[in-house]
Image (cartoon, rainbow, N blue to C red):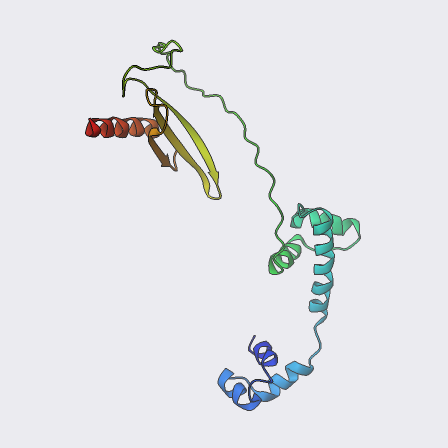
Length: 187
């Protein structure tokens, strides 16, 4: 690392002083300059170019495992860990698969509630009828759950909204309690 830095900036600094400051020997630095690349480094550079070609050929969808399979088909025997290391060193990151969402039916039985509104969504005064919904927002670190309540009378802005990292009935109960408290404070 120090040799590479010195090689890059050799015209800007006095080599003798720079070697003292970096605590490297001058002879070691000059040996580094004339040293040939090892067989492994040359192999890795060639392999990286092949990996990049395969990666771009498949529109950036192939990861280390699939690229290794393609390399094996081309009769290039290499370990998956090596392919993975070379990809991460060069910043080759595959696109992730789109997450498929599945519906999981609830196993607990709930008692049916009476339909109080009867599909009549109009109110004569404020804070008579609220409607609400819960939705989830996918993020890099999981899901956030959003609870929103709207007063039917105004039909404009939400009366309340809350976001949490947990999806439980606790979110609903907490949201309704906070909504009721804020309505009482406004009244």
